[in-house]
Length: 208
Image (cartoon, rainbow, N blue to C red; front, side, top):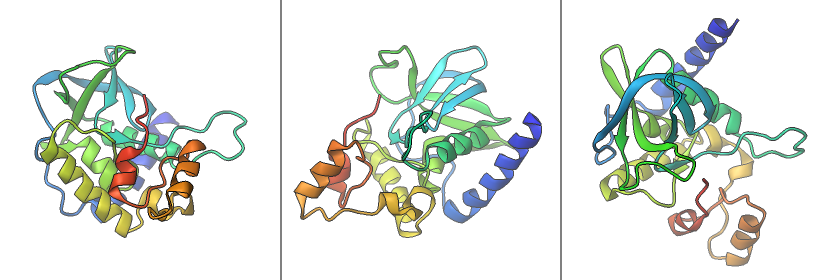
């Protein structure tokens, strides 16, 4: 059953790789650094967190994803489960290479913060770039390398215009940035994914 589920997720994900990421290079300019670790992926915890088979937990740098719905939550933010499943499909059966994203290699939970590359059939797939291009993630408020940030933002813009993934949901409709009261009210309710301009998006709080 687990193998069938993984195969189904991978098949579904293949569609958005081709539809949403047709022009993607194998890596994103600037989105790499010193190699921190390599190995196969184990558990996928959410849309930007997974563990290697040896148990080390990884937090994908440079992106934000919706949280997974909490039990009994009445109106969860959509997209968290889809992001987790998309990440699982990207990592499944691949050799994972982790590249340093910032001077600080781990966070306060001792998770490795890194750019991830999944090697499958001889090709390297930039995991963060693929998630953003498919509309399962957005660019974080802080990205360590400017070239990397600009490339990821370009992909996010294309995904938004095509209404892929998150951007096809009315929950993530753009706010009017000329009305800061509305923007702040939405952020106050932690619906900080809604933003009407790049400045508003960059001002959104960073998840941990």
